[in-house]
Length: 260
Ligand code: HXC
Image (cartoon, rainbow, N blue to C red; front, side):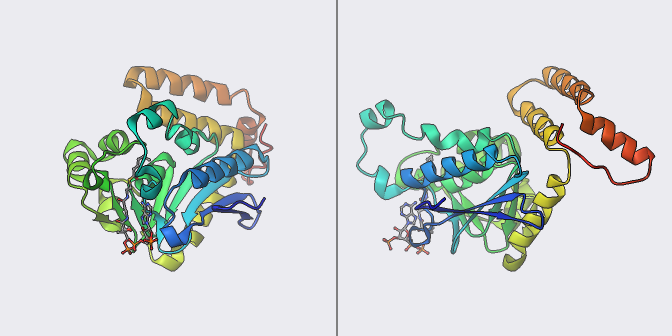
């Protein structure tokens, strides 16, 4: 597939990792409509592909993504954004059934930071810079910035970030729990791929169920979440992979998961 704004590649030693590279480096990978459509199509493609276990999203050049495309938004009116459903296809990444890792190589600002938070796991390069600078251009985050940061980092940090528009470093992002690891730039992608491969060695069906259970914590109360988790746990007993995993442990051999 040749797309204008994103590159896709199957990578990892088993070629079971779907690597998506945002590829609009001249505009610091600003997330124009075309790019978001290409990204959405790339996620569709890898989600459908039975060989792909895990997706990675990264950026070409010095940015992960410097936000929604300000030049594209500048002349839009309220009526146009409302009736046109502006940003409605932005949710695609957060709805992917397979795990998605963000490898944040540089600026993750505005919609770029929000895109990162739609992913399941984020690794960052030491050079990455984060922020929700929408307030500086007279608007507010529109794809989860005000909603997801507060759940990760609490109210004070969320307010500081959203109301000041201040940028923050990868080290600060790690301290807040926004990213799980900070790496030297040349180690970022190899380490993200290593993690994706590790996840990819597990049963795809059980990984999907586990992701669903973790995500449920965002949407529900603890009691409901615990009930949901227990039922999903029970449901893994309907898979051959659960039988295989436990048998392999007892027989002291590696499991051979069939994704069934
Ligand atoms: C459109 C952008 C852009 C953006 C950068 N560019 N960010 N174009 N939309 N978000 C373009 C610049 O216009 C410029 O193009 C080229 O990329 C290089 O950018 P420079 O500013 O020259 O680079 P630099 O001096 O290194 O500064 C980097 C930067 C700065 C600090 C990241 O570009 C910046 O502040 N960008 C905007 C960040 C931002 O406000 N993001 C939030 C957007 S609102 P030309 O053609 O001039 O060379 C948003 C809303 C989300 O995301 C709502 C929900 C999705």
